[in-house]
Amino acid sequence: MSKMYYLVERARYDEEALLELIKLFEPKIYKSLYFTTPSHREDLLQELNYKLINCIWKYDLNSVPGFWEFKDHVMSR
Amino acid sequence: MENESFLKNKLITSFLKNSTNKNAYELAINNPTLENQQQLDKLFKAFYFDIRFISHISSTIHFNAINYDKRTRTQNSRYNLTLDSSIDKNDNDNSFINLLIDEESKISLDKLLSHESILKQVSCPILYASLKKLTKKQLKIIELAYVNGLSDTEIGKLLNISQQSISKTHKKALKELASFFIENKGGKSVD
Image 1: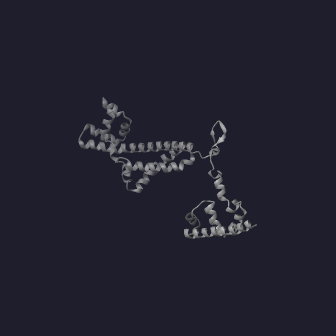
Image 2: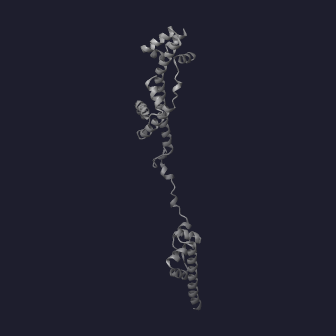
Image 3: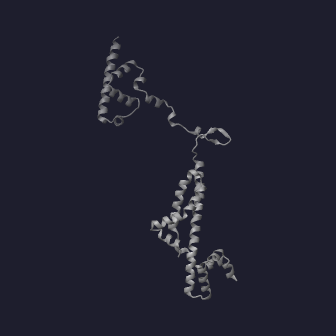
């Protein structure tokens, strides 16, 4: 499995793994701050970090399809 | 062949660009044992997880940021922070500050009277003179009882004195007023 998979798996109980994932998505979050006015950016930063952590914790690790499963999925479309 | 369209899938082409993945794929096709297929499955899962997870997170961040901005905008338009901005864009005379009511500025006769001391409200000269003879404490109790209409218990609570003591002072004050009244009136009636 990929490095990120193990990070997400560990993030549920390991704060350092969680922090590493947050750092990874930091540029994306900072870019998204431009959607709002400068006075609201700090609030939005906090909000997005909160959502990100929630997302990481709730992500279903077993939902990734295998090669054959993916093939069936693509062909059925 | 149907497999051809599958192989043209962008995800699959980029997956097969990696030589390890391609070898595993060819091995699984040419020699379809369970072990080879599982190896391919494993490689694909590792490859696909990153893509799926990153795209999921970035779209979540993207849409949450947009929604947050929408929310703050509607909130700001509903709860305006500037009082002097005009209510109607075409009408500059009316601003939000003109809609505010100052509850304190309402004037009622009762309120006005209750703030005046009893001495300023008495018109009878004898009563005025008799009230002046009372001690400060007696006057205060009489005032609270007859101008503000409080009971002895309420006055007690207000001045932090027991109800019994208020009652005693109250009675004594009334008695003094009465005796002063009789004295002076008696004097006058003799006149």
